[in-house]
Image (cartoon, rainbow, N blue to C red):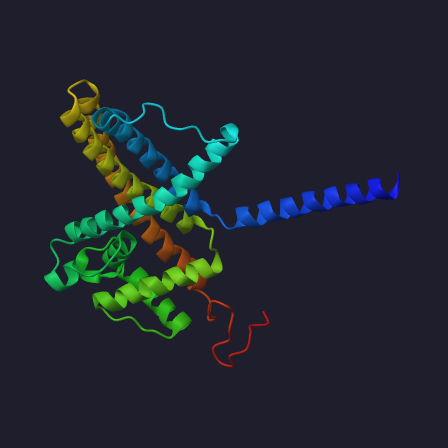
Length: 279
């Protein structure tokens, strides 16, 4: 093999290795939540927007019936669609955040106004329900006491009975769980809960689009779509409720299991000397 051929082969292999490394680094930046929390609801939301374009904007504004083709073939189109889904999923999650805040206020409607209007997301809401002894908690008093004692030993913070202190205790539990295992079961519950919240927002968007379709033209699509999106929204709201509850429950149980019998903190720091635990 000549020198020029060898150099070309080595250069080709080097480019291939660099390409694989770049793909590995890019893949490592995405996690389970990115896929189910952003890409999937974003893709569904783009399909809803296409219905808006095809049945409302195109007939009303005399827009072209066929969308312009993207140069580069199917691979480019798929990549563009996935990238657009991820970006649009960010907007969908913003709408889902607003819906979640109002759902939490609705779930806490029996609370005093100061507690009802606390800025909570669903996992925090259920954690407070679990940790509050006088709320008919599903947790026995012994488990609540164990969680609070473990928080005190691990972080040096002894939570009281106020809602703000219990919220801080839960947030500390969540930090400890992710420090121990950032891709564990609570992360899966969080991802699916985020998907459920986003799909409630997509269903709401779909319901609005079908109303616009009904205003534009009378046919079978509008009532069918309205019924479909309404049922989908109810189902996803129910699933969001369940997965938020499972997420909070998973965080608290994982925290107790990981730290409840240990006298050391997250990084294995000895409480007496401040040195790393040699064990």
